[in-house]
Length: 317
Image 1 (tube, rainbow, N blue to C red):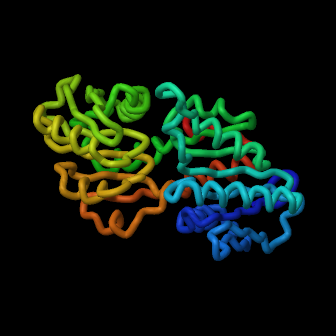
Image 2 (image 1 turned 180 degrees about the horizontal axis):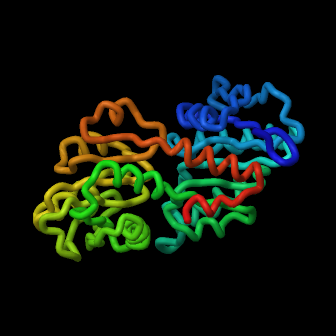
């Protein structure tokens, strides 16, 4: 595949090599040879080992755990490509870290998502492509074109293949996620319920009420991020207590920090489905009720369309 004014080049950092390989396979384009390693004091060293002059380069790098290391890799790869005269540099960031810090939550606190956006822009990135941003307004934090892709088409296909849609209810685990859940419910023509919860401390949640009649339904929780897993576990318990038949969850980004995987595995959740926007750990891979769904074809198609100067938004019409 070639772009209008030069060759496509795919460069991968160390955050998710499996996803990068899958995207490259979808595009029929090998990953560009590059060294991304550490000095003895853990400074990042990058060397691009192929000619990229005049090329349309896509860096595939999630800023997942360890977020700071992977962010620095992205910035330094960008600098190396800019100094190697790449024609255009697109940062493909399937999981955009720091997205949850998108506003001042209190006095004397940062808006870290804006800071990270500035860092990426000033490093020399020409365009950003990401997936299911935690807050849509983060697109406006960048002063360069930004494509926010949606995992919903992949999720909808999977749901249609696996469930009886006549007895399905989509559930938002909190009020803030209603727009996302409603959009998916509309695609599969399913009713919508909402979990009303009150968060007492960061990383903990207390379910207060279920808005909607879920009795007898198979419920599917929809959200963008699962971190500690507490919200999902509590939501599943509340739905089952209100008469739901079974509870599943479809979440784009499986952060799953700390003991989250064990918490999900021991919960009443029938299955948690996450994408490979973040490389799954071994604990996630062996968990009996966690399934990983690939979004390589979605991102690969978006990369191909961007290189060919075609519409990306039409992927989600």
